[in-house]
Image (cartoon, rainbow, N blue to C red; front, side, top):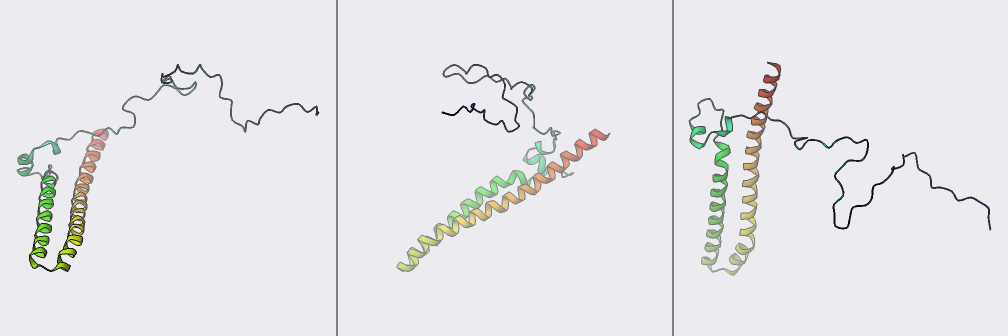
Length: 157
């Protein structure tokens, strides 16, 4: 037997965690208090940017249509309608192509149309969606820039 005293594991320079409270009761969530020294929890709206509210986007379709200052955009209101129309047109075109292939009576054309027409219709729908999303992104960048400019003008003025 050796007379070497037991060694404690190295702490690695980290402070000890301190006294721990009792574990929560079975089925109970842990207490929502932060550890000592951490301070109070942040307010509920912490991290949410405080954008200035603008009435420019609140106008309805006809209000935007007849807005001579162009402070409200019609395009952002029409995108949903344009996308639905694009889905209908792409679907009807795909259906027409399959009908033409079936009417031709050629087995190769029928098989090819059943394989490729849905694929091309899906790709057309994806590209339509991406294009419309790009349009919306450009308009949202403009709206955010206006809000930022309005907010800065209020702070400095």
